[in-house]
Length: 207
Image (cartoon, rainbow, N blue to C red; front, side, top):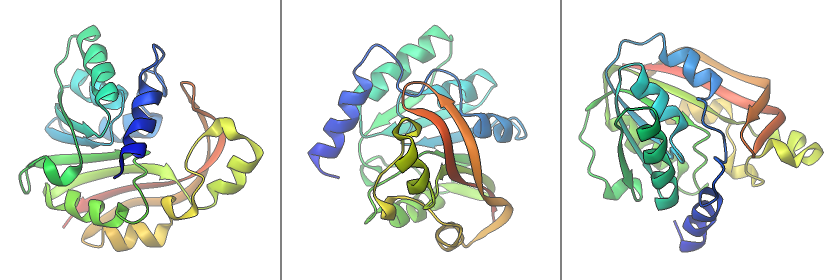
């Protein structure tokens, strides 16, 4: 990822307000509460709202992002909630996570650059133990139609950064599909996710 990409996220997370709020994503919260507490990894975790929630319900939480400002906000949020999260800053290939180390992985609006998103998914797959669960929510390719009507709903404006059901099936082909759908939803998350959008939701168990 280039410096402009990192700078963009550092700028977004440098403000006093939390860009996407301090409450966890609704879908993540619903799915994670079904799981026994264990080791979980949050990818592209930003300001930590989801990681902190997981820690509050007993998970051992690891998280990463390219933004140091995101980490700073996440650690403040963790402190305010009297929990600990292990947060790394850097690109995934530099972070030395161990194979099959995690019981769960969460990808919540983790929109990586188009040329690396599938390879990052496949790398993350190696860090999840067999029988572990992956939880995913992100904007679908149909979302551009919603974004054209309401920029406040947020999300990438580049089609290739958005997701399709076929891409998820391909990237996570070694998973039992527990849930996989494209869905219109209402978002109300902080400053940058507000309005009607189209998402892909996926929960899978690694075979």
